[in-house]
Length: 405
Image (cartoon, rainbow, N blue to C red; front, side, top):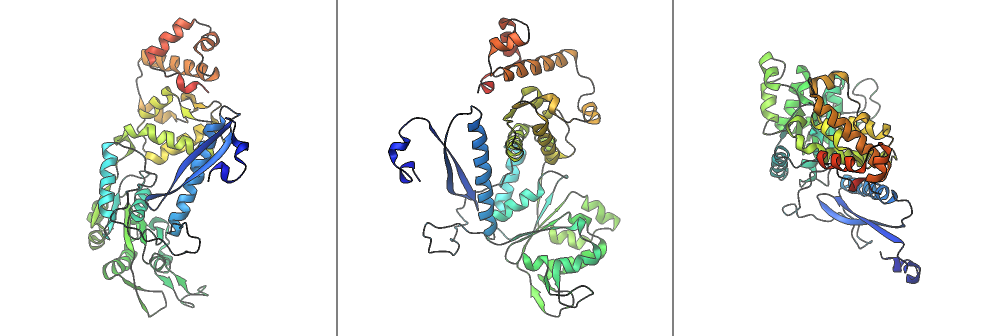
């Protein structure tokens, strides 16, 4: 909608108005554009509004994807629009990174999403297995149907059958009404069995039958129900080792291991850290209403040197805390909540020259940030000459443009 459509065009004839427009993506495609007009008074306002608008657009896209339908221009038509899945673009649903390792994951997801093959996602905790499972679902012909998640590790053994297959009224004490299980809720869609390697041996046989014959009965019922849910399982456990120990059924392993995708650890794709950091900074700045717009070079260098045993989830937690505690618009190395164990394991012996350069970088970046990128004012704050500061900026490769409002 143009401004002239909502009011007299003469009201918008001055040059004080600005427009921000961001795409709204859902079901693997752009379904529209969300725009906002505003007057620019606060020098930091544009970035905040842009982040806020992106968050709103993302929420709209997720809501549309969850409902499985895209609204049409004709308000009289309410049924879902048919999608041509053979031509729909691949959407990796918030998976961030362009490293070779992640590109291989994207290509594999693209291949398997167009099929109904049972898929096993493997990788360390925190590598984003649920995101990949959702990407498979959203890029499949089942995207308009439910995506149901089951955490097998958190499922009590006594309630396993009831939770997965449902129960009839009166099947056991407390069963006051019929309840649909996860298999039934995922009918036509995707059932994500997370942490399947943690399933007790006694419950694996019950799951195997449902996967093998695609049929089940509710607890206390006699009606055999057919399952039309695509199965995506995930684990960070050594299933082969569990099979050798006799704690995981080999036949169940073969049933879920039709197609395997192995997700790389974050330490294997360090080149993706800057993009991940940028995404998390924007996300948490909007969520916590903080005026944080980026991260210093020293802090980013520090992050890229860490082993990250917790992978992307650990990085996300570190950035969230840094956004909350940061006193400036740029996250500094001192804002990073690095434990003594992490520091020691990352760099046991730091050369003195490296340590001095890091300290110089942090001091210069802080001075530039506090003085809107002015080298002259930064030199005055650091009680040194402009020539020295410019020399250090060039030597350390510090970009000054990002500090100017």
